[in-house]
Image 1 (cartoon, helix red, strand yellow):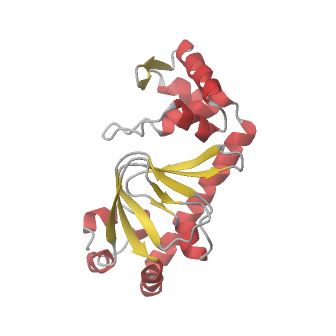
Image 2 (cartoon, rainbow, N blue to C red):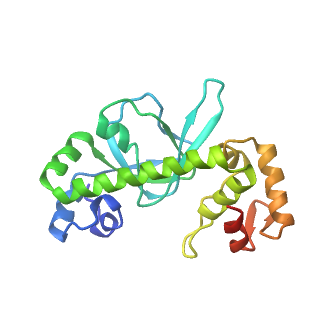
Length: 219
């Protein structure tokens, strides 16, 4: 199926390509619908397609031998995942699971390599995307190494608050714990502490940010 040009223009991989190039690129994509909770990619599996999220949210995570989950990132519309495995040809280093119903657009590895050779701008964009991904992982290492749990929770709240036009990802306390490298009980105490400081208000099935500047200062 062909992907519309407007969607491709929103993806960092394809910034700077002209209309004709985008139309050509769009012919290589296929669509996949995924239900909430469905595993899209398991750590250790080979990756055959580079996926872009068109709607919904996906969590990318690693699981320890003891079954503890560490969420590395939440992938939202316009973002890609499993690119590392696509580009180096090795098994996927992470798992990916749908947090909501999700629509994905995928492009096969061989087709992507063909486009990279044909469009130099796409190659430059790919370098930029992977560099940004490296920075994100470095920031996560810094978070887990040097910040306390309350600071990490504050960061997660800010990053998933939405942008005013689209809602952010709805996270359970267990998912937040998996993002900040802690356990649910510690996250619950951290949320209570942030509420006591007036930064947030805990409502049923919802956390409302009351003082964004206070959260930023805590981070």
